[in-house]
Image (cartoon, rainbow, N blue to C red):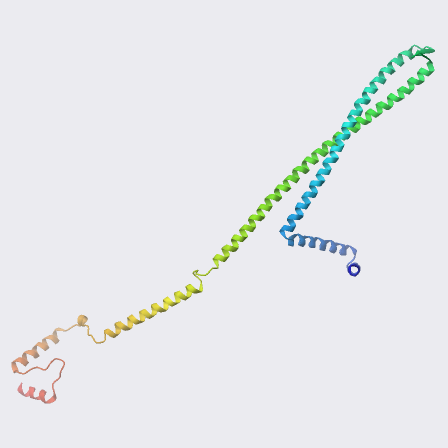
Amino acid sequence: MLKKVIIAVGLVLMLAVVVLGWEKTTSYVAGTQRVLSEEADDRAPMRLERARIEALIQKEHDSVLTYEEKVADLEGRRDATGRGIEEAKKHLLTEMELLKRIKALLDEKREQYTIGRQSYTYAEVNADAMERVEQVTRMQEAVAFNETLLADLDAAIKQGRSGLGEANKRLAELRNGMARMEQRNVNADIRLQVAQLANAIAGAPLTADSELEKAVRNYERRVSAKERGAATRLSAGMGQFRIDYSSAMVTQDASSEIGRMLCESQQAGTVAPPLGQRPSAAEAMKQDEQR
């Protein structure tokens, strides 16, 4: 299965190179890799991303420890080189004192020298002196080289300690920053939970816009309308059998006419018909004859 996948990918790449060219295909592959990497970073769960960062921090911590061990090795070598230089200088000082004594003997220009109960010719002493000069020269060169090496070691250690300090500082900053971001992440989760609870409360029943509130308001409106209709009909029914004379206006002429008619009726000895009752036609003719 894996072999088939590899062959299929190879064929696609070959076709892309033929159609688009090598440079464009390479750019597309690089762009696709970057996009996929960004998408993976954006879609990865927070816990997985945090674990990945913690693993990277631990990896950098191990690298810092390894770097510190190397710096410590350099410091050990520097100390050993320094001790070697000190010992070489002491030995060199001894050899220089011996060369001074040999020079004094050679300056005497004697043919025979008795040294340690042994007899040596001038040529033998001179040859031994030359060999010692070569040895002292080599020792001086070794001391000079070791002093240069010591300076290089000091510079490397100084740089290493500086880099180690920066690395530890940066690593501490990243750890503290990650701890703060983790707390911010926890706080964000808490605020999201509170927001969800707030949204749930905001959408709860018995609000001003709930169906129950709307139904109660509609029922109240209908009851109020029924009450107003009943009151209107009741006042209209009670007022149709009564005449309100409070606003009636009686003119002076009508009042005088009624008084005159009453007086005439009393003088004639007849009973005036009740108000509102008209006489018959025969009674009206008889009244006219009597007048």
